[in-house]
Image 1 (tube, rainbow, N blue to C red):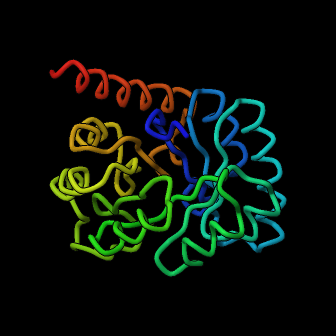
Image 2: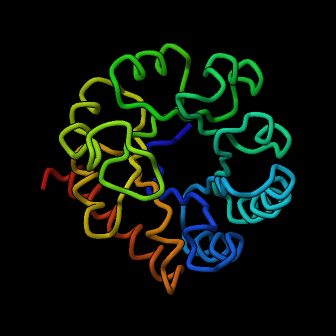
Amino acid sequence: MKIKAWDLYLITEQSLSAGRKSLEIVKEAAAAGVDVIQLRDKNLSLRAKFKLGQKIKEICLKQKIKFIVNDRVDLALALDADGVHLGQSDLPLKAARKVLGKDKIIGISAWKPAEIKEAEAGGADYLGVGAVFSTKSKKLNSAKNGIGLAKINEIRKTTKLPLVAIGGLNKENAAEVIKSGADCISVISALTKAKKVKAETKEFKNIIQTAKKRLREGI
């Protein structure tokens, strides 16, 4: 799985979308080149989330981008999503892998050494690391203002798993997060609250790709 080729990862959350529907945002971001879409929308009922997921999956298939479900292995299975993203309090990684099979993508939130070691042993496909900076959408389980860039760099040195950074990320700090060792930038409000989602997605992705290019060239 070429997860290290991912640049921009959108997580849906209608409560942080300035009154816009998640599906509307997904359509615009997908058309503009986002690489992954994760169905989150924590305030929706399971039935409503399933219906939304069906529509998001159609868009992802059309645009040939990955569709991930947050937390719920059962929902990911029901939607035949490309994978699931698990938190530390969700179904254990090994159990999720047993249910989903070897071909599905499983990401897991991890930044502590023991969590990373467990993720590697359990066959995780990527690590969700953060919150990098202070954010309203993710409960901080580390320092008050997030784990910071130094921690991303430290994690990068300890694992070969792809790192998907999350938490307080925007166009102004994305390049530094990539420079610190992240492979992909994951956002909610940086795109969901954007007035022009398509334009913002394109600009965001260009910033990430430029940062990666500079790293490859040693600049």
